[in-house]
Image (cartoon, rainbow, N blue to C red; front, side, top):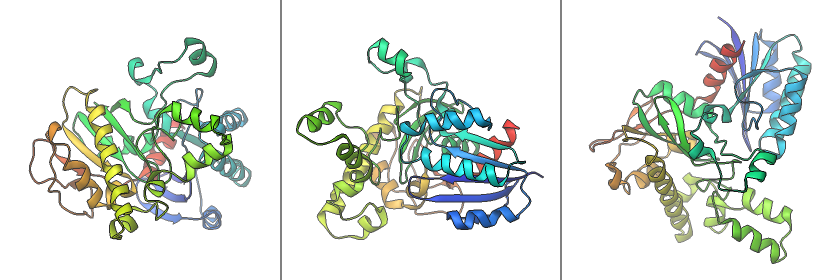
Length: 339
């Protein structure tokens, strides 16, 4: 078998796993632990890349030109891509004779239908800046398609970053995130979709671009909704503060709203799938979302957490599944396919 080091840097975390097929041989959750994995025999390194921009559309073997394309994408996902670039450069220096592959999250959505991918913006802007809906969490959604066999799926990746996706026959046909990972449902600290006019108005009122950027990326979402109590769904569920309950209610409402919107891109809904750290491990959130989706034939009364992927719904026309997030295994698959 081929041993792949899968690198998965998040906006505030790092996961790395040494994978041989599907068995995980070793793992790291910090940069110092990561470098200890280099003592193993490694045949290839796969790097999660949250945003591939307009050029990196598929898993791609890295050379110097690819590094520059990653650098160009830094402004598109400022919480994620700079971290990936730093690790990519460092690991290429430490493992110069091992092939490296970047695995863009955006690749899963590269064939979105034009009606779903195109913004209603001036054509000159779209051409000049290559503006489109890129979509994110593609590695997670691709893993979901390998675990759930239904043809028409509504998937929700809920974690530090959150999005939903309509998947038909294993392909993305619509998704809630757009040009950047700031779009869509509210997240733990990111705002999700808001009125663009609101942003213009805040700047007109005197907020600087940096203040707006920090507010939208780091002070919004569950943290902002709860008045600064917490960005952690577990802490909010356990809290008796009304602001915590309100934050969770808004979170669930916005997820329901996006799932219902995604359903319009499918002929029917064969299954709903929850994944991501919150989707996999927070039954209270799953219940709050599904109990309000009766219009789609989805009902609450879900069972609690599972040790393995599978059904959590009891009754109802549409089955509800949970799938453990295993992006690192998908990175391994995509890396080997690119070599």
